[in-house]
Image (cartoon, rainbow, N blue to C red; front, side, top):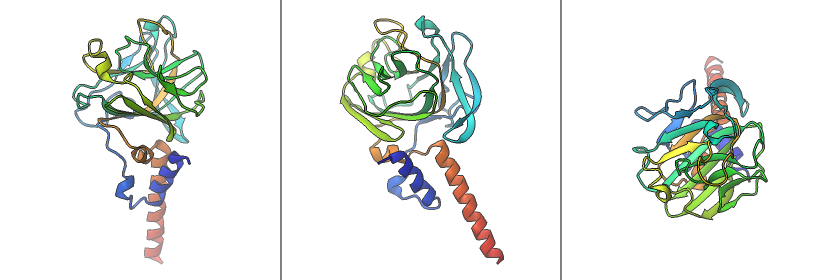
Length: 263
């Protein structure tokens, strides 16, 4: 069952009435990349660009059939200091524990490395992070990976939830991938190396083994939640094409109401 499609269908069919059980969870931070790295929420810190080559840029792209502005990160795989991406200081956003969720829409442009870093919480001091692995599946290294193929050159929605007690769950395009017992994605595992509880997106570790696991890409949205989201909540998160369906549905219903009024 494709939860992504079902969520969109529910939101479209119930554009004027969304059941509470399917209400979208509220993020503490949303970065939409509308020609800015600022968050949508007032008072929330902006993302910081990792752009050693000065090549990152905003561009217009089609994301799930919707034309919108995205952010392209452009760097070199090696040396790691020339990799590009984004980072955010989560102090004041998360509740100072290990429970959080990250929901992203992005693409890796090509398979330029055996591994591609999605994000990590070690301040780039450890190879342990969330990746697309050599067989092109999502993986929290070194704990385990999921079954669904991640394809390059197209957008995917990728979600990772952490219950705060050494347990993470991941979804690809709304479809469940894995449950893992691991502390790899816990801030507390790197408290000395990462006192500001930074999340680095796309840029791999600068020290230790496994360096150079990077490829260029484009990101359309990043959402951050201060708790573990349930599978139902993951399914209820709206996506760009869902917004378009909602707007189309509301416009169509308004047109029908107008015709009835004037008949």
